[in-house]
Amino acid sequence: MGWSLVVPLKPLARAKSRLSRAAGEEFRPRLALAFALDTVTAALACENVQDVAVVTDDLLAAERLAALGARIVPDTPARGLNAALAHGAGVVRARRPGAPVAALNADLPALRPAELELVLHSASLFPRAFLADAADIGTTLLTATSGRELEPAFGGASRARHLASGAQEITGPKAPSVRRDVDTGEDLLAALALGVGPHTALQAPRLVAGAAAPEGSKRLPPPQVRASGA
Image (cartoon, rainbow, N blue to C red; front, side, top):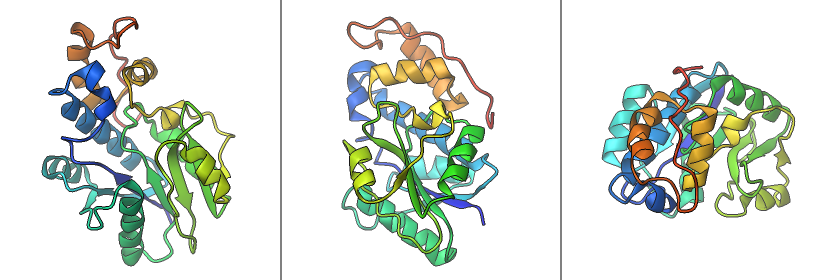
């Protein structure tokens, strides 16, 4: 069976708050939505992904993501990120008992399906596994194979918590796009350099032309755009 991915997304008005300095408070929600759209587009294009469930209460995001083919799951617990992920995994397995489940960040605008496929293949060898973010502090992906609970511990220094919980860290495949989450202006620079999806690329010219570069950093470069599904 293919993987079922669970993607959590805050209401856009509160999403990606650390990007306000780089993107501006008015533009930040549009950028957060673009990240999520590119993340889900790439995930759905991955051959060993069966479906994607997005846990969100944001009506605009739900409409746009459902149009891509994602299943929308309301954040019924409303108790934060990890409760939302556990709830999403439960909803998925109520529909697909025994499905391998993965929690995936919604802020991976450079995500490439082929790299995600490599990571998921490595994860399938362990009951629970995770991929650290580019900073080796947080987590961008957490997986649980059939019969195992996801046990998410995202937020802050989650790499250490997932290690302590017994999850296997995935270190083999070279998959920079799966590790490149975006929380800050510097993260966005790195994602643009990797090549972002079409939704983020559509928003990026405003950042490139304006005063969106983080203080003390170089101006944001023109985005390298990857083809949808590349």
